[in-house]
Image (cartoon, rainbow over the protein chains, first blue to last red):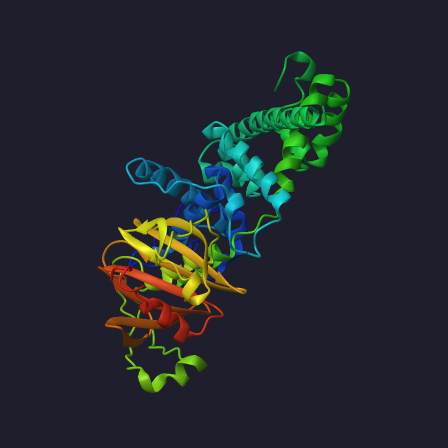
Amino acid sequence: MAVAVGYARRGTTARSAERRLDPERLGDHLDRLYRAAWGLCGSREDAEDLVQETYARVLAKPRLLRSDDDLGYLLRVLRNTYFSSRRAARSRLQPDPLPDGQDGLEDRSLPGPQQALEAREIYALIAALPEAFRDAVVAIDVLGLSYREASRALRVREATITTRLHRARLRLADALEGNDRGTESVMISERS
Amino acid sequence: MIRGHRHRRVSERDLVALADGSLPVSRRAQTERAIAASPELQADVCAQRRALAAVRGVANESAPAGLRAGLTSTRQQPGRRRAPRLAVGAAAAATAAAIAVVLALVSGSAAGPTVAQATVLAIRPAQGPTGAPRGEAAILPRVRAAGLPFPYWADRFGFGAAGVRRDRLDGRLTTTVFYTRAGERIAYTIVSGAPLAAGRATLTTTRAGTRLQSLGVHGRTVVTWLRRGHTCVLSATSVPRVVLLRLAAWRGAGQIPY
């Protein structure tokens, strides 16, 4: 787990327990980090920007980690970047998001329409959770960290993480049920 | 522990761990017994599994190709010197005699985004449609960047405007219009603000009084130039460089401000 992380200071020798974050391996985590960013932002476009900004920050300087969990460290940078960019965005001109259905170019990495719809709904529900609950779901269910790793990355006690995760999942289940009810009523009204 | 004395041997941690499969074997039997005896706990675990299944169901979402390309570009950011590179394709070779070749070394400047970074926007999908012009207009209606209109190429060159997207690049507002013609796609990005550094080796030529630089980025042929001080970036994978140069220099009988 990346317990303490910092810049590699010039002229100092890293302690033996520390190692440098390998920039070449950052691409290995891209998909998972992108999904985590989507869960934080609730929008695919914002998630892209957030991940790009996160990587730009991480790569700006050499980073020292105390263990081998790059992902936990990246989650922390992702969250920090998310909060700071959200603060900055309040005072900045925002491009208007337009419907995804109007996408005009093929991107083979993109999912099919039905899958994209489901993903958009689910990530939007995650993003709409209260912050603490959302962080727990993103860290454990989306990113795949263990409870211990998540508690270290988010700097809260493990018991707190599991409690939050429990409540977050119940809220998500309720929200999903609400969505299903909505879909069902639309289908019924279409049939009648 | 949750929900009073009846379930005091089952914690929330046990429930979340049972739902996601991380509960240790030593706790499993006891937890399952407690759940079997309680409809309330059964509903709890069912709800958690439903939520978890939904999240895991979309866990195969991959990062978009543009983001992956962006990571590569970020990794290759200036800050360290690289050897000069000159990207010259077959089309470039054919017209090489007419082109003044300028070798621009990687600047290493840390100030502002580069043309290579702006090119990444070309891989992203469009966010919305563009309108068609009225009459003989050589510009697209309603789409402007830094006060500059985008050209209408459909009648003259066969490239119809397929969509538009807007982004921020290092705090700069960017607008990209996508043009298509029989399977070929061109992205035209205008980045507002001070000129961007090419960041790579470029070929420079002048057409109709406009200085055009061309380079290769992520397998795309790129032509970049300035319009009223703002950087324009034209890029495509399957369109010859000479075509991009011609499009870049076209002024639509004076309707396209340079």
